[in-house]
Image (cartoon, rainbow over all chains, first blue to last red; front, side, top):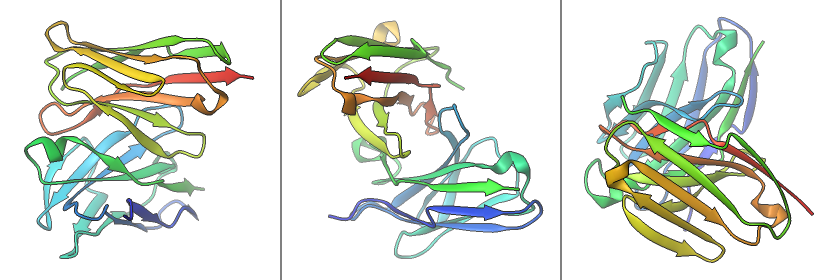
Length: 116
Length: 107
């Protein structure tokens, strides 16, 4: 049973560039959420995708955008990168947006982004 | 949104010791989860525990929803327990994490 897979695991970008991170949810899950974890902090919610639509969004600027595909996989795009975007980006999957299945998050290993 | 406070922020133990980690919440607790983040960054589910007590091996957790707190107990700690422990409350569909408790277990 495949868990949540994320790619790439590490990447380095320069200020102003754009980055795309990818996530495949756990088998049987249909909802994907993205989190940003700065060093020494807890994960912060970016947004959640369900049925190919953004359902919830945290306090992140429009430079952060996403997409969900029909196979439930998802992408996180960040434009005009800033030094402060350097972080571990985590993807979590769950089942649905309501009920007990939606409440249990399964995380991937993350993509570590460094912006120089 | 809901505020999540974790204590202690740091904890250093000798192998074999027991410990208690705590999460306090500013609002109602409905969908609480505990996670362990290993040194490589992987977040591992420990418990989904909106109320009551659960046990899994040397770990157990208790949530008292009416008093807005949750406790994670680690007994007979091992070096592999090292890492950061987070609690998270889903709240109004937007999960909120605490800042974590960093645990180091020395052999």
